[in-house]
Image 1: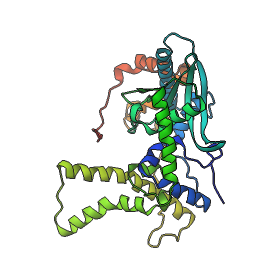
Image 2: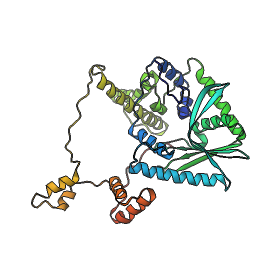
Image 3: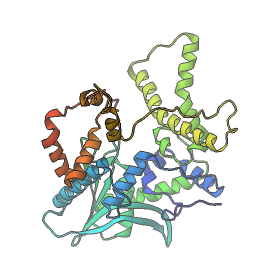
Image 4: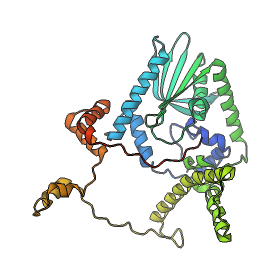
Length: 374
């Protein structure tokens, strides 16, 4: 049985551009596995599911009620979009070209690749197009000028709108400090991007293309079936284990330390994803992995109805409200959501109201520093 995404038609998609650029053999492996019926769709992670909810709401097709975080992200996205579009239009008329608009690259009449525009705007005489892509998570993303996905979207747009003279691409990132990243492709650069995409598609279609593992493997559908990725994920632990067994373990610094740390950071998400896959496998086939089984989850006491708990506590002599509250932890996110329901406010208005009401008792906590590649 061949498993194919209806919209993507099983073709290379711009969303996988970075992965394909780094691993030329990835698409070939995915195609073979799809033909063999071995690709089993994985349920989206909570973060990915939240991102999909935000994107649907941004496109005007809300699928479900948004959480406080999702509503806040959507509000920032809409304001960023308005700001960028206003600046891009330069006071001249423009219109929405489409939202969640999938374009296809064709060779003759046959589609050979595709990509979806989150939102695009167009001006005529001369034809200019603005493409905006939202990234709602906080992970590292290549800036617009070197972003493989955006370059392929430029290529797709160039073929589908042949009279375009300029394409501006932009990343909107509502949950990081640098919220926008823009790059402008003139007409020549647009056609260079198109030529590069055709060349890349020819290259990945050749037989026996090498598979090159790296941190991009975490997004690959073929991860469970790729020995190169499995070896890459286990290499750092094998190397360290050998040093420990020899008693020669020393934390490398300088370029050697940078190389080891890069391997560890790249391997970690692969290990986490592979571990999750094995857990799912054991849930379905308990005997699939000799020596391992799923232990029942720990049972932990919890109280979900805080009001009922207080009413019960209030019956105990000497157990006052202060004592009860000392055993609770207040969630700022949930408190803001409750305030929103009570006042009917949302987005920026809700944040301002929250600050007015609870500002004097709210403190900012600084988390531990995080590693970031320069």
